[in-house]
Image (cartoon, rainbow, N blue to C red; front, side):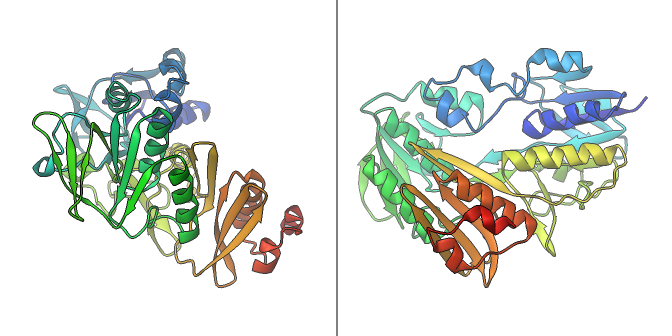
Length: 400
């Protein structure tokens, strides 16, 4: 009987082990997680959970009993310290576990502020794990002054929640505009206006020089020479793939753990999926950080472990909730050279084109445009810009 070990008990790891059983795999499965709680959803952590609108148990992807019922050994609070590909073993708490196939679903790590600029002070938080958010929530109270470092989606979502909780919020972004790395100026402008309307101080083209304080943060000096008083700092400076274990084991690293189109790494008995994995895409390589990618890629790897031999073809989509706005994103906007605006009432969407080809859609409180845009992109169809921007266009007809 074969043994599959999965390292990383998050969305990808949970999805992969469940899929293996669904496909009829009857060997041993061990799912190993560094945290001491069962696999859980991360997106609600910094939103509904932090706001007290979701209980801890509702975060769990599946009841813990599910894993027992499916004969999946769940080892929690058990970080893996080493992988030996030659011996096909992993080391957990000094114990060596043998595997026939190993899957790395180790996810990603948040970027921290260096200790040299005050990153080790009390009151400085990142947004990644349940413990991170519990620690952060204990310090958030109306009237406190919050500094958000980073104007990407993580930082802006944190700013929205802090504002809703009654904190005084300042967001600093080193780039010329918020969301510069991931979105068009139009989307940046939309969310700048939204946050400003809620009293958030958005400062663009400004970075952090250093945090001030003895043991707990009390202020910040910014790169423009200004100083602000601060009670809590939330770092939303992005994430990096958690590939240290893979690198130490000698696997090829290339913006994450390099895999082929099937999800196999440079070792034929080791696979990878989710935030930690980079894979071939349109003549290059890509790594996607999203819940949907974690699920889809993990399930495909499970199929390929069972011999399906399928290439992974992502259908990227993402979302972000800020105040009463739901942003839904379909596709990838890499290489766009034109933005088409569709605006009907309170709903607005920005359509990304490269020449005449539709690449992606950002839809704000516009689920209809999002769904139609997503289906068009998946079908390889590109409606004319004039049709998209015309409010009288029957969008559904574009799918025919």
